[in-house]
Length: 405
Image 1: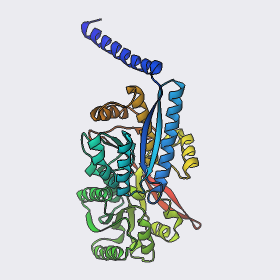
Image 2: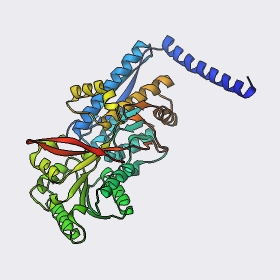
Image 3: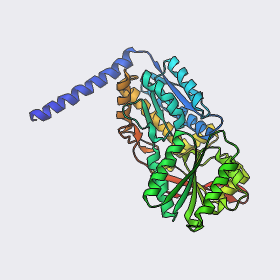
Image 4: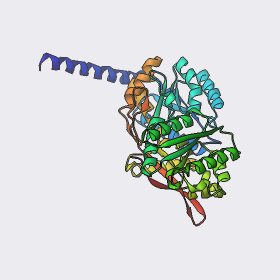
């Protein structure tokens, strides 16, 4: 063995001894320690379907890890505390303050970028690790902070849907958006990539999440459709709304106007497979008439079959189908379990905590695939599923249309 190989051997040997010694010491001498995990999710109101399915996914992962640790005499048990934020940034902030006061150092969530923007200052100042399963705003993609995100950002999603619009022959798009950083971020990304391909984007209106009257917004969209139709065939014009549950009010009020559903409509991940939509007849029929579809982060091929038991458990516990965002929550919890085991507890110090999390995350191959993260702690790639609405004899259902390229 040459000197270089010899040094490498001894380095690996003593590293292994240190790790084994750490674990043996924990096993032999230390009592079971409780590790607090906080989940900031929406259990009522907007995105409740994602919040409830995510809560189930996290709890399942916690149970699996705790049972595994018990069987292998690893002296740590996760204790999950759930905070219902209702997708409200101020409620998320209040929840984060409670988390900080409790001494908890690890948070899964929140779901939206607007909420994440509110909790970020506390996370960074107090060294609390925050990992969102669904925030996408590019403005929150910042190096060396305490924020990690397990889904591709709006630049990746915006490019995907802009390319799809172009492939469908669209030459002009009218864009309306909820006034929050996630929705606006996706709208801006779509605008950038669609115009780069030679298309025209008209940015029309923004609205609040509490908006219920879309009369003026729809009148403006209608006027833009009529104006654009003098330059483009109607099948080359589209409308994209980057919004959340308020889209149901929007679609309800648009349903009776043939000009509005004469063009194709598109949606972002905030309205992906929204369960409240398909129970609303008028809004669903508008989605059908306008060939509407929205996009969501896609699971790797075959993973839904591989994890069919997990899917069934989530449905049983939450009453909602799981999607890739749901499984991101599950994967986050699994990464946290590996980090705690490998480090013999929560890594000390904020820099160490985020470094150790990153090291484990980028090697994890979970339900959502390998969680490759970029230098800002965001998922660095991904493809997207497109789901639209169909009428099955008076019953409306989401159905799979295809994938982005």
